[in-house]
Image (tube, rainbow, N blue to C red):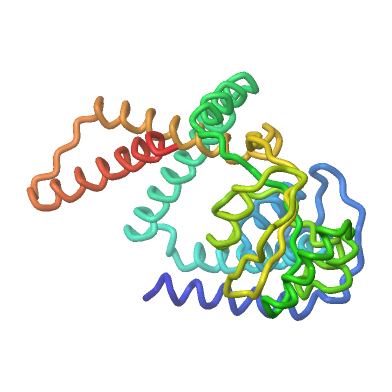
Length: 297
C-alpha cells in the first residue's frame, strides 16, 4: 500500500509538471554542465539524464526541452523531500536500510547486464545468429497477383470475357473493382498462401504467371477475377530489418546462460520445501521456455 501511495504521489506530481511546462522554451546544454543549484548543491545534466530514465512513458512524448524541464522539476522535488527525510532520521531506520540494500543490488544487476550481456555483443555474433535463425526458416512460395472484385457472378463472368478478348486487366480493375486495390489496377503485391482467404489462395497458387482466372472465384467478399503476375520463393528478411530481434535473442540467451552458471555455483538453501519446489520450477520454466523458443524457430 505504501508503494502504491508513493507511486500515486509521484504520478500526481508528474501530471502537475506536465500541465505546467507546455510553454517552456528550449535552452542550450553542455554535456554535464550545472543546470541548477539547490541549497548549495549542483544539479547537472547527468542528473537530468538519470531522472528522465525514471520518468513515466508519457514524458517520452514531450519535446526535449520540456523533458529536461520535467526532469529538473522531478530532481528538485526528490532532493527536497530526501533532505527532509534525512532531517527526520528516516535514512537510519531498518526498513530504509533494507530497501537501500535491495535497490543497490538491483542497480548492480542492471549494470552487470549492461556491461557483460548487452554491451558484450559483437557484430560477428549478431551476423552468425542471423544466419542460424534464417536457416531455420522454411522457404514459402509467394505469388504476385492482381484481382478484380465485384458483387455478382454475372459481372465477374463479363470481366473474364473482356479479358479473353484482350482487355487490359489493370484498366478494368480501376474501372470496375470494388476493392481498395482498384486504384492500383487491382495489384495485391506478393503474398503467401496464408495471407489470403483459402478460396482465393487456392485459385491463385494453382495458376501460372501471366494467366487470369478462367472462372470467377467466390469468397465472403464477393466474386474475384484473378491475374497472376509472378511466382517466387520468399526471401528471408534482410539483417538490418531484424537486427533488433536478433539482438534480443542473443541477450536473452546470454542472460539465461550466465544466470544458470551463477545459480549452479551458488549455495542456496530454502528450508521451506514447498517454496523451494516452486522457486526451482519457476527457474526451470524460465530456462525451458528459452530452449522451447529456440527449438520452434
